[in-house]
Length: 160
Image 1 (cartoon, helix red, strand yellow):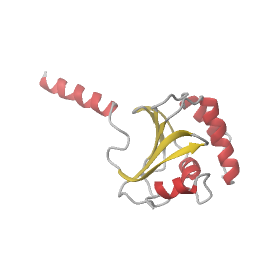
Image 2: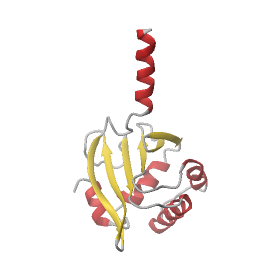
Image 3: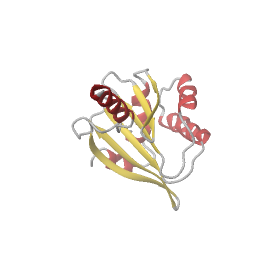
């Protein structure tokens, strides 16, 4: 009985474990548009330093406004286009199946494992994954590229 209780506790705690609990915060900042805060962003790595394409890494976005899923998808594709990212047509379709609409204080986390697989979490619950190793660098470029929409946020996320 004691063994069963311990196994159940382990299963429950791992289901609710933070997807960044074993990573170190590199930097954080907020994205604002006009007068509104859109989200607070945090970037994590294994050693607390930014190194492009050295995984595991995670990006956490805690939203400060309600945003419809379609608006999130549209903004993602527009940023890939603006940055000249070589994105694949199936990625927006995969994200459409994974992502929900977000409300104030919801948290969406991308966790990239050592092999480059991308897992999305919503309020600490696993939504699903995109296993294409080209996806993570393309997605993270929105925040970490030298040509990002908000260079000050990029510097903050990279620990600068």
